[in-house]
Amino acid sequence: MSERASFATRLGAIAAAVGSAVGLGNIWRFPYEAGQNGGGAFILVYILCVLLLGFPIILAEFVIGRSTHKNMKGALKQLSPGSHVYRFAYVCVLGAMLILSFYSVVCGWVIEYLFQALCGQLSGHSPQQYSTIFSAFVGNPWKCVGWTVLFLFINFAVMLGGVRKGVERTSSIMMPLLFVILIVFCVNSLFLPKAGQGLDFLFNPDFSHLTWHGVVDAFGQAFMSLTLGISGMVTYSSYFKDDAHLSRDAFTIASLDTLVAILAGVMIFPAVFSFGMQAEAGPKLIFEILPNIFQQMPGGYVWAVLFFVFIAFASITSTISLSEIPITFLTDELKCTRRRATAYVAAFTFVFAVLSALSFNVLADFKLFGMNIFDLLNYAGSNVFMLLGGLFTAIYVGWFLDRKVIKAQLTNGGTLHTHVLHYTVFCLRYIAPVAVVFIFLLCIGVLD
Image (cartoon, rainbow, N blue to C red; front, side, top):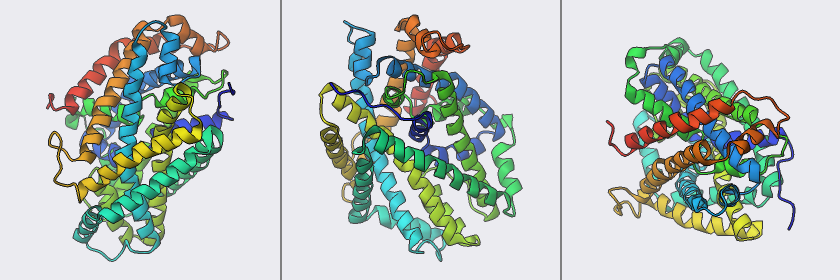
C-alpha cells in the first residue's frame, strides 16, 4: 500500500483548514447578525461561543483524524473496534456532498458576477435594476447552470492535483491573497465619509439588543462558520504530520476565521452607511447592495473586480474542503484511485448542483416539504447533517473515546505541555451538546 499523503508544511495545513472554514457565511451573515444583535455585544458572545463550541469541536475532529490518519469511517473503526459507530461517517459524507451541491450554485453566481465586473457591466444601474438583474440571471437556466458547471470544473481540476499539489498549493496561494484583499478593502472603508457610523453599528456593545435568540444565533454562526460536523477537520487532520501542535493549530484556525468575519463587517458597514444603503444579509448583500455601492465609489470598477475575486477565493477554498471529504472516503474505503474517486464525486455533485441551479427557473414549481431543491439541500446539509455530525462528534470524543487517546494527541505523546485537555473534554461533554441541540431547535422553528 502506498504511503498516505500529508501536507508538506504547517503553513499549508493551516491555510487549507482556514480555507475550509472561511466562506460566504463570514461575509454575508456574520456582519448583519452582529449589527442586528447589539454590535459589540454580539461579537463578544460570538467569541465566547467559538471558545466554548468551535475550538473544542475542531480539536475533537483533529484528535479523531490525526490519531488514525484515516477518514471518518476508518478512524471510528480503529478507535472503537467491534462497535457500529463508524456508520455515522455516512452522515458526514452525505452532508458534505449535499452542501457542496447547493453551495456550488452560489459559487457559480460569484463567477458570473466576477465576469460582469471584469466587463464593466456592474455600473450605471439603479438599486431596483440590480435586483432585477440578479433575478433575471438566476431565472436563466442556461446561464445559471453554465456558471455552476464551470465552477465545478475548476473545483475538481484542483482536486485532481491531490493533497499537496491541489489542496495545499491552492490554499497556500489563495488564503494569503484573500487576507490582503480584505485588508485593502478595510483600509479603504475607514476613509469613507460615514465610516464612524458603520463601525459604531458593528462594534458598539448594546446589550439591550442582545436577546437569548441572539445568543443562540451566535452559537449557530460559530458552528456553521467553522463548517463543523461533516468531518472536514477529521479529513484534513488525517493528513497532518505527527508533530503538528493540534491545540495551537485549532486556536489559530478559529481565530483567523473569526478575524475574517469581523474584518468583513469593517469592510461592509462603513460603505453601507456612507452610500445610504440598507444593511442586509444573504445574497442580496453581495449581488445587489454591494455592486450598487461600488459604482458610487471612486475607482468602482477596481473595487468591484477585487471584491468578486475575494469572494471567488473564499468559495473555492471552501468547496475543495467539502470535496476532499467524500474523495478521501472513497480512496480509503473503496481503494479507488484519486482520479476515479474525484470523478465519482464530481458526477454526484454535477447532478444535484444542476438540479439546484434549475430550482430558480425550470424547476421553480417543484417543491419537496414546501422547499425547492436548492433550499432543501441547504436546509438538510446545514441544519440537519452538520448539526447531527457536530452532536455526535462532541458526545463521542467527550464521553466515549479513551481519554488516553485525547491526551496523547494533544501532547504529541507527552512531548508537549497542554492546559486544554480538561477544558476541551468539559466543553465537549456539557456545553457543546446542549448548544447544538438549541441551534437545531432554532433551525427547525421549535424555538421562536
